[in-house]
Image 1 (cartoon, rainbow, N blue to C red):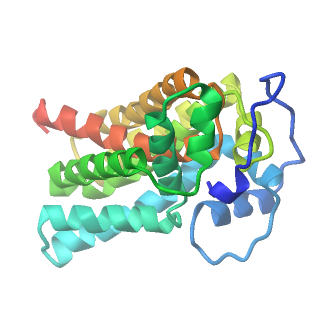
Image 2 (cartoon, one colour):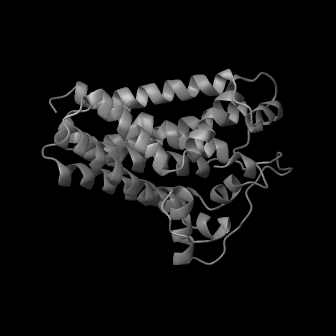
Amino acid sequence: MSPQSLNESPPEDGGKKEVKPPLSGHGFLGLVSFSTILPLNVHSTIQEMARFTSIWPIIGGFIGIIAGCFGWLLLYGLHLSPLLSAALVYSLAIGLTGFHHLDGLVDFGDGLMAHGDPQRKIEIMRDKRIGTGGLALLLTVSLVTVTSIASLPAIYILPAIFVSEVAAKLSLVSCATFSQPLPDGTGQYFIHNMDGKLLTGSVVLTIILGFLGFNFMTVNSNYLGVIGILGGLVSGLIMVFITRKNFKWTNGDILGASNEMGRMMSLLFMVILISGSVY
């Protein structure tokens, strides 16, 4: 989420507004263009894109396939070390999104470190300068993500990256579902277009993708992909708790941060299960 579009202040009613233009394929392509650096040259309003918030994980899966295939090529084609391959895969994954969500993660970290009431923390989060909190959170999430990828058995690199990107978007949409939006920014539209029923559909969709992703690409993986998806869901709920405690309201930066946290948690869940099992 771009910080320039998040000049927000807390809403007086603290509630959600209905912003729901008609569904259109143009809106979905706009969301793809908004979420990636793909040169689709599709111009759509945020309101049109936001109608597809609940199926955002599908776009995450597309990113995951590209990054996962890249990882497979690095490990099996070029025979690079797991750590170097992990760093390159992570770089590609965040690069494909134009680093939008990474920007939110840094701003979120700065806001968390700030002292004062929610309004003060939001002001710090919206500041264009990067502080120690943002750098520390960026470093922490990046290190854990890269080392988690490096800890995966090579045979699981493609499905695990696929699942982690799907789970990252599930973390984002689950955070949006239970959040109170700040107005006048991109984040509010995605929050407006999520509710419990749509989240249930997203969870079912992502669990299916997680299960099929592993069981089509590998053998004897059982429910490893489902565990990765649950990592993304847990991450989104944790982000809701942290946000309500520190900021009260949610903006695009927080949604972007939830994406990065979701990827990390998904990979962690899968690595922990692999380490404690016979995979």
